[in-house]
Length: 401
Image (cartoon, rainbow, N blue to C red; front, side, top):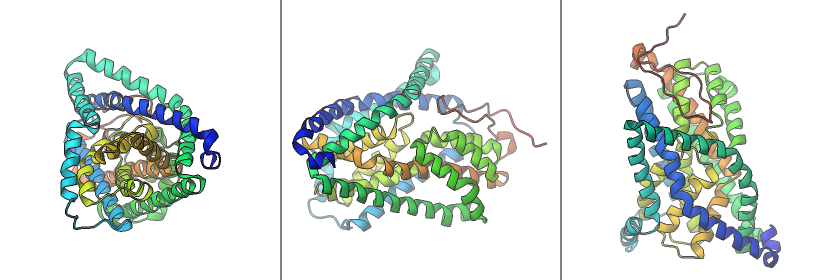
């Protein structure tokens, strides 16, 4: 509203915000490497072994892919994306892939590849792993400070949107984004409560699940906008509902690191909303199919980075590069993407991500005796959000009294 009602006095703030954001965009690859490399090294050194661990990781990969496809379908229905692309759509897709190989978007993809290489080196070389751990802890400690810095930054981004679109249109876009995110959050919730939990997890008393697990966990996740910060509460509530201790202690922390299915769903659906509806750019099925695998990769490669300047920033940069936007439209597009995706929409995404981790723990707990030998149960303590995810010695096992 400030930017729209006072465009001339606020123009310097809008211009300064674009400049700051352009610097942050340049730093995004470093954030990717710093966040992803330690996670890869830790998972391989401590966790990628055993039938149970493999099943949990496979489930989270499936949930992320499924969420992203669901978001694509929602966007196609809401914005009436043509199922049969026009004559130039495939050539556009080919051009976007060329842009991805040689343009600015390739920097982020290269950063992910570098993260994998460094993470693999950390598995074998102890001193590299110790450096990665220190980087991981530094990012975790910086989280609180970055969260405070995001308050004036989000205000500045809002001013930039107001200057660009006007007060009424800017507020209208944000209100529409809230409703859009809320609708997708309901779809994500129904998917678990109607299909996954009763069919795969054998859950019958869903009222108890709502009361003892879902509502308190979802509210806390929404308040923090962080799956990592929600880990202790998530574990406590899912155990209160009745999930096995050894399952909850493993599934929830791993899910907070590698699983963001609700985010994958919503960021896929944001493309036609922001690029098509807000900016009037042409987005079709071909564009969505090209960007889809990278959204899946980004959502699974975003541990430890605050959401507004992490995943939202990366996906905004990706769409801007794939659509071949030039300055100053490129920075305005990315800033608008980050601003519209932050705040209340981020609450819906985080609640969906965190509670889906708990739902996974419930599903695996209820099916544990049938599919997994007790000799392969990973046992470990609840995880603090400020430390690396510990995956315990798989040779130990827990016996019931």
